[in-house]
Amino acid sequence: QVQLVESGGGLVQSGGSLRLSCAAAGRTFSSAGMGWFRQAPGKEREFVAAITWRGGGTNYADSVKGRFTISGDNAKNTLYLQMNTLKPEDTAVYYCAARRLGSVIDPSGYYYWGQGTQVTVSS
Image 1 (cartoon, rainbow, N blue to C red):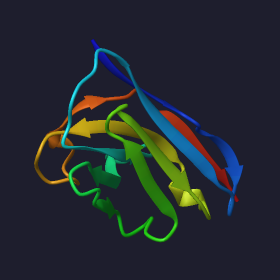
Image 2: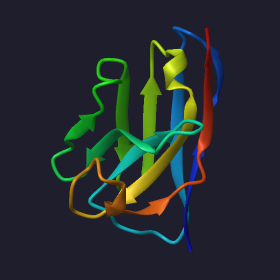
Image 3: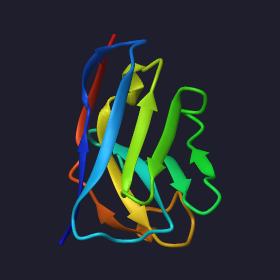
Image 4: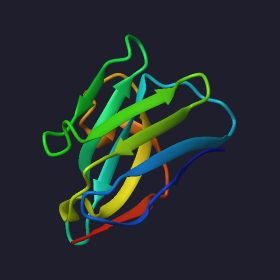
């Protein structure tokens, strides 16, 4: 009964920006935090960024530090990812997810997942 829905993906040129959104549909739920993952064709799903509600701490993959910013509202179960200075290697399907306590980079700790939104960066 809980569904996460991503939006905001699209096609942009290298150096451009996109803002991804993730909203919960259905019943309300609680989580320790939420995060963004991405998966490119033929590759494993990888961690991008996460936020922990208690304290508001954030974590980023080294590949996106300084370019991406994660934010959200735990009361509304909403999540955002501001992506700047996009590169072709950022091309992937981006997923938002909600997690319990545990490692923020481990996908096994996330129990709700969205269907993903495509981000394509052209050169």
